[in-house]
Image (tube, rainbow, N blue to C red; front, side):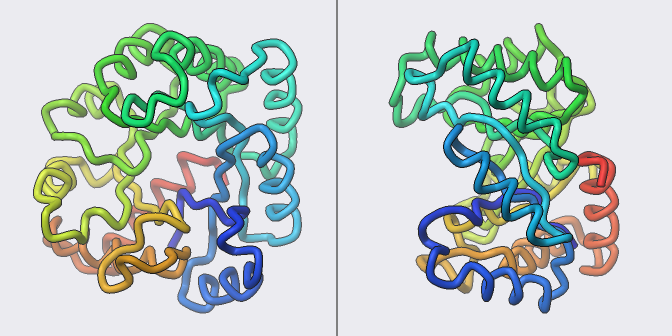
Length: 252
C-alpha cells in the first residue's frame, strides 16, 4: 500500500521521524511520497527519499508561498530537483482561496508556471485546491499537464467530474472518515476506482479513530478501510487496485 501524499519533513516529526517511518513500513505501507510544500522543503524531502528506498519525493511550492516566488530562480531550483530520480512529481502546487496568503492573481501566476514545468518535464502534478475549483479547472484545461491529481479532495462530485472525464486522478485523505463529510463520501462513491488514490496529508487530518492527534503514514489504512466500505469492495481489492494506480501515476 502507498501513502501518496504526506509531509514527513514537517517539524511535528522532528523528534521521532525514523520511528514514524518504521511504523508505516511495519503496517504494510511499503511506499511513501514525501511532498514538498515550499522551496526550502525540497532538499529535505530529497534527502529523506535518498535515505529510505521506499520513500519518494516531490518538488514544488504551495500557494501559501506565492508572493515570494521568483519565476526564474525558483523555477530553476524546482527543475534541478526534479532531475533527481527519487523526485516523482511536481507539487504540491495549486490555489488556496481560504487563507489568501497571496492574492488570487499572484497564486494563479505561480500555479501556471509550475504546471507548465510539470508538463514540460513529463512529471505528474500534485494539485492543492481549496475553494478554487473553477480557477483550477480553467488553468488545467488550458495547460493540460497530462498526469494530475487533486490531492485531499473535498469537492462535490459535480465540481470534479470534469477532472475525471479528462483522465486525472482524485486522492482522498482522513476527512472521508469524519461524520459530517457526506459530500466527500459521495465523491468517493462516484470516483472510478482506476482514478482513485488515498493519502494521509500527515501530520494533518488524522482519520478516525486518531482524529485530533498528529497524523502519520501508518494511519492511511483507516482511510483505506473507509473507502473500501464506501465502494463496497474488500480491503485487499481496494488496496491492490489503488497501489497499482499510484505506481503507474508516479512511475515507481
